[in-house]
Image (cartoon, rainbow, N blue to C red; front, side, top):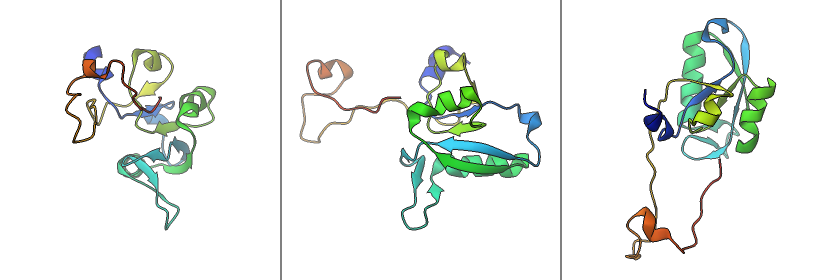
Length: 141
């Protein structure tokens, strides 16, 4: 897989355990609940739902382990993996060379591509370079 392709992937499963070691145990899984539609809190049930939540539950079911799912701010997820406080992170984590040096990733399962969103009435921005000198908003991480 090319490094360029990996950099465009916006969702992956970060692991600190080998797949062969997961059998009939409970693994500590962490996510950031603010990455809709991948992971979010169902306000009525208090349950974490979304695309990533369906994936981790299916992986656990097929691999034969239980999950203890908790939430935390995105910035704490990789450090939690590094320190062994969690076993698995699933939170729309972009695969980068720097992150690959400190955690193991699953095969990429979603390629979001990057997009610029502007108001429909805005005819000034049609490509990245058009943002120069403009105020923009983004999510860090």
